[in-house]
Length: 349
Ligand code: F0G
Image (cartoon, rainbow, N blue to C red):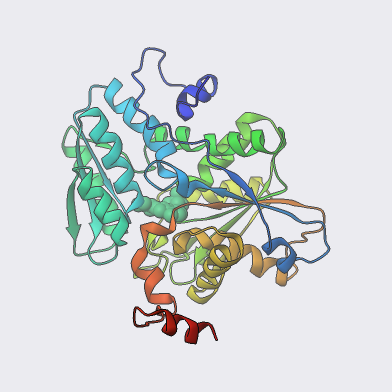
C-alpha cells in the first residue's frame, strides 16, 4: 500500500474516532540516515552506530506535521472552524498547511523579528492570518491559552494532546527502521518540550525497547537545565527560543523514567554541529535541529555518554531552508568572478 501518512500507518496505536476524517499531507516516513563521517569523528573505533532521523523532509519541512495531522483531524471531528497557535515558526507553518487543506481559519502568533524567513513565508503562503506580537513565544503562548477560554477556537500548540498522539509516531518509525528495536540513546532539541514528551510516549507504547533520552536546550534558553524560567531567552536557534516550556513537567518525567540527560549547548556549539551535518553528512538543517547533535558531541567528550557499541539516533527536527538568513550569514561569502573562462582557470590554479 502506498504511504498515506502517520495516522493511516499507525491507526491501531492512535485513539482517533474510527469515523474521523483524516486530514493528511502524507507526513512521516522520513529517512533514518546512517552517519557517513561524523560517527568516526565523534568516537573513532568504538563501534558507535549513529543515525539521523531527518524530520525536515516532512511536507512543511519539520516534525510538526506528525502532530498536526492528528490535531487538525480531531479539530474537524469536533466541528471546530478556527484554530490558533503561538509559534517560533514551524508549528505556524504546519498548522497553516493543514488548515488550508481542511478549510479552517488559522491564526498564528509569532514573535516579532524572531521568526526565520522560510517559516514566515510558508505561513503566509498557506493563507494563515499571521499576527506578529511585540513579545516572545512565551508571551504568545499565554495569549492563545487565554483566548481559547474565551472563544470557540481550537488551540493546536502541543498542549493539545492530539499533537503528542501524532508526534509519538516518530518513535514507532525509528523502531521500525532499526529492525524493530529501539536505539540505546535518542537525542533531540527541547523547546516547548512537546516532542520529547511525545517520543517517550511512543517508545513506551510501542514495546520495542526504551532508549535513554538526551535533551538539548540552547544555553540562552535552558529553563529545564537550570530549573528556572528564563525571562528573556536568546539564541541563534530561534525555533527553541523558549523560556517557560508548556510540557516542562512531562519532559522532566520522561528524562527521569528513561534515565536520560538534558544539557545546554552554546550557540557556537550549535553552529559547529550544524556545519558538521551539512558539510560532512550532506544534511542541511535549521540551527535548532543541530542542537541534539551538539549535545551528543559534548557529552561524549565529557565522557558522560559512552558511545561504545551503542546505537544512537539524533532527530533533525527541521529543514535548513527554513532559515536561509542564518545559513547565508554564517557561511563564507560566494567567490566573485567575471563571466570568463580564463578567470575560472585562474581561480582553479
Ligand atoms: N526543533 C525545531 C525545528 C522546532 O521548531 C521546535 C519547536 C523544536 C525543535 C522543539 O520542539 O517545542 O516540542 O520541544 N518549535 C515550536 C514552534 C516551538 O512553534 O514551531 P518542542
